[in-house]
Image (cartoon, rainbow, N blue to C red):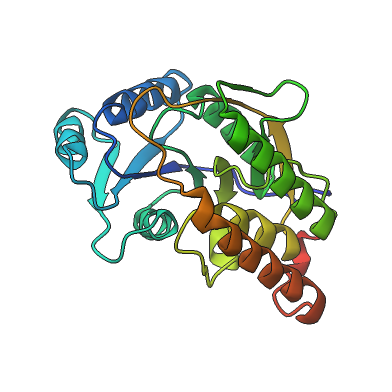
Length: 256
């Protein structure tokens, strides 16, 4: 897809939703901050506490005293992975955002690669764990099977060729986030709503290989039984927009 000339990203925001992550949240923000500092990337780390009942928010407050780039906030409304991400994006001050998990399953070195791609002029950067150069470590077998089936369905429905739509770890320029509103997903289905709307509404994107590692502490917050219908709803909603909106939402200046 053709790129347009874009202004460089002045500041990068990383939004991290967190719920009961006291065992890993300090390491997550420390390693991320160090990696971005090494590469001289102006940044802020916005961690949204999404109703934790453990010490997650207290740990973030302590880390914030020594790390001025860390912004710890609480989701004061209804809880939910998607709601927490929206809360973080509302609070961010950067020119672009990377959405990242709190459990260090995403590699902070890939954030640097996202930054570089955005500064090449792309509107979005999507990571794929299932392309040459990418990989997964200790992926639960049942989740892996469901992941591949879900992504095959989405790929067939939209014909975009991207094979890891459901992965949350992606990057967007601020204007893309503004351009895909209203955002409907209150839960993990936001991971497919954002990239699918970006593609359907004409924003350009790059795909890069990334690595993923299963969490070493805590428990996953995604409930598989609850997500099937939510993913399907969002996919069909965006598919209907693609075919029946008559281009009302299309950002024609970004079409390649």
